[in-house]
Amino acid sequence: MIKQVGATVILPRHKASCHCGAVELELSLPHGIVDPRRCDCSICRRKGAIVASVPLSGLRLVTGAEVLTEYRFNTMAARHYFCSVCGIHTHHQRRSNPEEYGYNVGCLEGVNPFLLGEVSVNDGIHHPADRPGV
Image 1 (cartoon, one colour):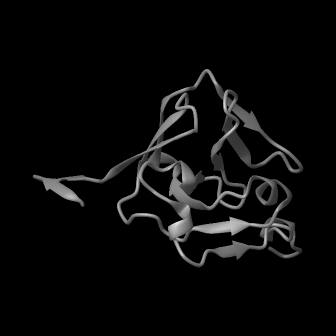
Image 2: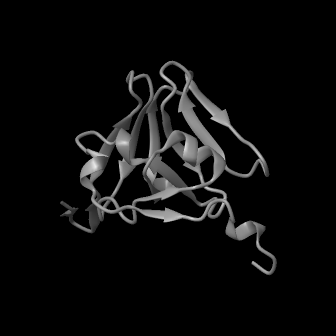
């Protein structure tokens, strides 16, 4: 629920964390989970996470900076983050839109990603940035 106090709009904050709880994120999701999806690129196929996006300003690392590990591959553009203790992928700075983070929907407190119903799959094998003229 969005609350307004005077001229200030207070957006809903949601907690997300890795499995062991060492990494905790706070997400601003004023419209809830928007456009959840899977990707078939080499890393996403392996991690199997359902992700959704949030602007960079909509994600805050609350705890766990010291255990958060970054992984980059191929073009080195996308920045994938995971907990070095339990190994759970929490979020990534997107290659296709570096102004957004993709977050692991399964890390949201109180959300069961298996109850989302049909989830679309993005063609990450043929990334838009790799296509001529794009």
